[in-house]
Image 1: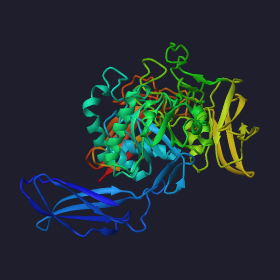
Image 2 (image 1 turned 45 degrees about the vertical axis):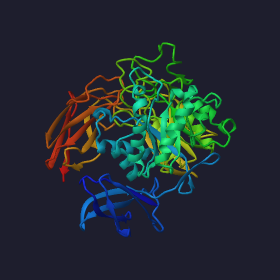
Image 3 (image 1 turned 120 degrees about the horizontal axis):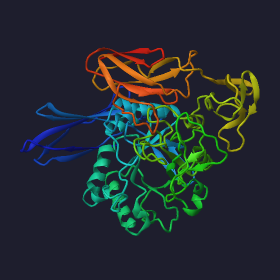
Image 4 (image 1 turned 90 degrees about the vertical axis):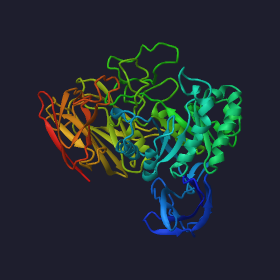
Length: 602
C-alpha cells in the first residue's frame, strides 16, 4: 500500500521536518512503523509518498468490517507538531461481466438500497445516531450496500458504513450541463463540476466501504452526443485521483446505439435504472459489459393499509395522464401490487435479479420514505411512498420479503392485520425462508399448507374473515421452524412505549427513538387506531421530533403531540449535556397513559 501525505507549511520559512507513519491493527496493536522520513519543506509545502506492506492483513468485509488505523505525525525539533489519523480497510473486490460481483474473492450479490439524505422528522441536518439507526434497520433487513442518491453524503455517514459493513456507491451529480429543473445544478456545472468531483474523491477515497464512484444519475446528456466528451472528462477527473475503484453512471437509455454516455466507452460498469425485463438479454445487447442495477422498483406502499387487487397497478399510468385512481385514504396498498409506471413491484424486480449471475446486484428505490416526491398523490401528500420503511422508521410488509430473501435468519411474516368485516374475503400472504412449507390456521382450524413454487417469493390464501387468531406455522422436514400470529384487536385501551435505547449519551446530540403503540386490553396493536397522543417530557432532554409514517399527514414534526397512524407513532428524544434521566409520558383521551425512563450519561 502507498501512503501519500500532503504537507502544508504556514510558517513562511523553510523548515526541516520529520514525517512518521504508524499503522495499528483492528485490535489496536502497532503492526507497522515507517522509518522516520527527514525532509525540508518550503513555504508552499510538499507531498511525501511511502510504500508499506501489511503481512497477512485482516480483511474488511460486510460481515466483518475490521479497520486499521494510520497515524501520521509531523515532528519539528523532535516535537510532534501535528498528527492526523486515518481509518482504512484492506479488501479486494471485482465486477465480472458473466459472474457478477465478488468481495475478497467470494461471489456475492449486491443487496442494496438508495437512501436520500434526510432523516425524516429531524430534517436534513446531520445527526449521527439517526443515520446509525437507519443503517441498523437496513442491516437487519439484509441490506449490504447503499447508493447515496444523488449527491455525496455526509462524511459521518461513510464512517458509519465503514464501521457497520456496507458497500457504498458514492454519487456526485444528478445533472450535468443539461437541466432537469430550472434552478438545478446545471447552472453551476460549468464552473464547479471539476472541483466538486475532485473534492468528493479526495475526501472519500480512504473509506473501505466505497466500491464505486458514480458520476451521475439519469443524466440528460446520455441522449445526445455531448455526453461522449463529458463522460470521458468526468471519468478522467476521477481516475486521476483514484484508479482503484470503477466508475459508473446510472443510465435509463437501454439501446447501446442511442446512449451516448455508454458510447464514450469510459465507464467501468454499466449502471441501469429500472427496466427489469432487460436484465435477461443484457449480455446479448452489451457483450462483455459489467452490469449493475443502480436503481430499481419504485413500488408504492403505505404501512398498514391493504387494498386487494387481482392485477398489478401502475400509479400514475404514465407521465401525461392525470392521476384519478387512488383512494380516499391517500394510501397505497402494502400487498406489493402498486408501483410507479416506470418501475415495478418489489417481487417483479427481485425475481429477475435472482435469476442471472451477470446481474451484480440491485439498489432498490428506496430504503426509507423521504421528504418530497409524494408520487402519485398531490398535496397534502408530502413525502414519498417508495420506501421499504416509512418515514418514522417503521417497516412496511415488503421489509420482510427482503429479509426472507436477503438473510439467513429464519423469517415468517404474515399479513394483513386481522380486523375486517365478518365474511369479507381477505388475501393472507406469508413471507418465509428456511422452511419447506407454511400452514395457516384460523382459530385453530387448518386452512391448508402452502409452499413456494418456481419463482414464488410468497404464499397466499383467500380467507373468509372471522374474528380471532390467524396463525402461521413454518416447517422444515416436518419440524416446526417459526410461528407467527395476528389477532383481532379490540377497542383502544392503553398506550405502550418501546425505546430503541434506554441508555444514551449526555452530549446534547444523542437520541432515543420511542415507538408509541395503541393497544387493546390484551396488548394487541389496534390497526385502525388514530388516537391523538400528547407527550410530556421531564428531566435532561427534549422532544426532537414526532412522526407516524403517514405520507399525507400535515401535523408538525416539531411538536409535543402526534396522532397515531394504524396504531403507531414515534417520539424522538434528544439528550442535553447534563447527566441524569429523561422521563417521557404519553397520554390520550380515554386510554391508560404510559411513561418511560431514558438514562443519560457520559
